[in-house]
Length: 366
Ligand code: F6R
Image (cartoon, rainbow, N blue to C red; front, side, top):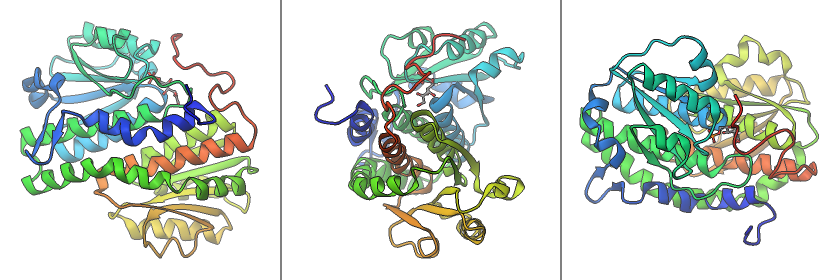
């Protein structure tokens, strides 16, 4: 079943060019300049008139929810909040009929996410699911939804479900932006065309596997790691840190790059690997200066940059080059090296990659 791969996690990382394509299948066409999610079309009026969208999720799905917030606010201009399902349900949240609650879940069985949806439904909000497991409890409870079609995810560390969720959230944001005319036709076209190119760009990144494995060997003995990113790449920093923690048991934290100076910078010395994603065009010089601050304190910088980048590549200890794309689509690319890196660190440390200690694939306890 592992089809020649040593672990399900590696197999699932490598499946992503296909699973991202599957998440888009029948939903996007650059030729016809069209993006449509059937589940959403049914309730298009409610979406277009929504006061706000609240996304509830846990773990990795929460991180894709954060990217969803950036996408929907940036492109469709609808206010979005993202909440850990467990916090949302116990804090007496304010909800009204004009709100839409979207649950993100690979398994569709996560107890806290399910309970958050039940609460939202009781309060009259429309509930929407972005789920992988067909026929799961969350899929059955929701008013409407979109499957991500990633196929069974066996490795406990979520990889292809994450990129599948982000792909569907991108389609949702694009289709709302189209209906609300919040972006120009030209920009819409550019994003649709670029989105269709993402699977082959992911394939290109997967070819960096040997180089990433080498870097993993260089960093594996450090007991801590910091992940930094700005804008669309901030949630990716959180996800990178989670991937490292859960399978290699190395302590890692993700931060918005600019927050470093408000505390975490005190941690930086020659024993602290710092993973920086610098593929954004906006605030680029700011991230360059964040990296300079790390280098000045002898931190070890592993930089994920676009091909041909010089400023950061010139001062980083290790550089992983990825193809460039439109900024809202960068998470679909920048997360891939992080998945591979965590995988190789865990393998090098002899950990049980597919079944890390203390974790279960679906968390059905609250
Ligand atoms: C991380 C991971 C967990 C899940 C979380 C939510 O790799 O797998 O953090 O993302 O338990 O699970 P789902 O998406 O099934 O609701």
